[in-house]
Length: 100
Length: 465
Image (tube, rainbow over all chains, first blue to last red; front, top):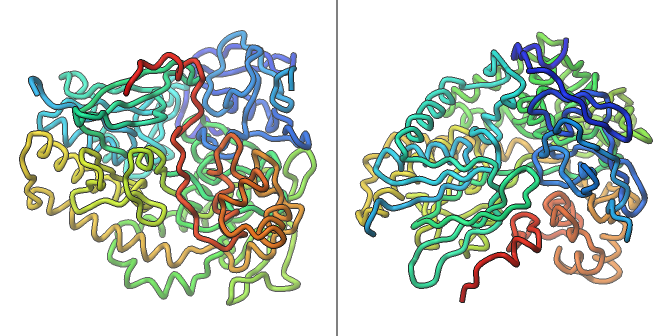
């Protein structure tokens, strides 16, 4: 079973973004975190200190663990930001800024 | 006041909605300011509209209550009595000197980059809560999520982080989370609860005062049984394992004192761990306004007034107690605020029913609180190399060194010495752990900015004295 079934969800047509250069399918209204989870991806940040992998932790915008780079803007909370068609989403390493 | 008074309600969960509807029905113009794109808060979080859920009630309880709230909100919005500002993330509420009014500062949109300010004659804080998670080795691995986070992603986005889940920690939230994950197709390998059945039965007389909620708990237990979920009371997750993501957890039984029983540790394979140790109130906005706290919650009187004139609070912000309590508090706060805004003293007999519900729900919450407790001695058992502050990657060893060798006696000194609590989340995630390791109570956060604010938004604010 898939988690859309209990609510009998009939989403509108999916759109496409990219994640680290690969196509990422997203349903309308889905956040970056949700689209990545649905694609089987659970990590999209390397920490500043040890480069350890991170993804969603609190899921409600409080913990900032799920930070991701969207269209060259680092530090976006994947659990809050919806995917828009054509978004270029990349794993965020460290602060995600070149000067750091 | 030449026109009807204006009340800003921050938060559109059960407390905020109940308060907004109550005040609007009494002639107050309500500005309902909420971070989500749909009302409901965490408890009644709705699937994103684009997902086209035809049975949105499937993951929910007390749906009829929600339908009443939603219908009421639509009616008042259509009549112009409530303005619902969705996707507005409030970062500060400030009293205006002289006028007695308030300015609410928010950031609009999911990217939170555009500043918005709104003014009101009074403020009602229904800011809810967030989850407390105590650290253990491996808790930063992808695949380890908070119990509430797993539920939020499922309710709002209809997604799961993996196939095989363990739900662990302590508290009444674990039951609906485990049932929700199982109903959505995850294999729930175990529900690991550190509280024991004896503690629950000792408090049964107090809990029986809220038979509805107790029955709800029993309903969850029955559904877990139907899904074949193994419930392990008086057990704990000692560690999570994996390299790039979670692969397994080690679970152990606890003895009567709450310490792991030697020889009982075993590995359970899973790719998801939903873990939580209760909730904490969001009090940042109240603290900045100068409202007194009681412990970690906003202190309120019988009318849900804070000690700052013109500021009310309701729901989890005033003490974690669930949706029933939040609704009752919201109704009382809404009536009190409406009366006071029109310059009259409210008549408490008008909210006698809500008052009884509030008293019962608070007693129930207090009884639950004494049942659900994290395993004893968790802080002493934390290995030195375990990360405690997830943002700044500060380990338990460094926190202990700050306390032991360097003599730090409180969380603030630990922060200055180690950077624990200085990162993006501003200590919301590591606060309880640092307090536990330091051996002092959890301090109020004192965060004048309730969320990160772009410098451009600050620079664009009009000058005030």
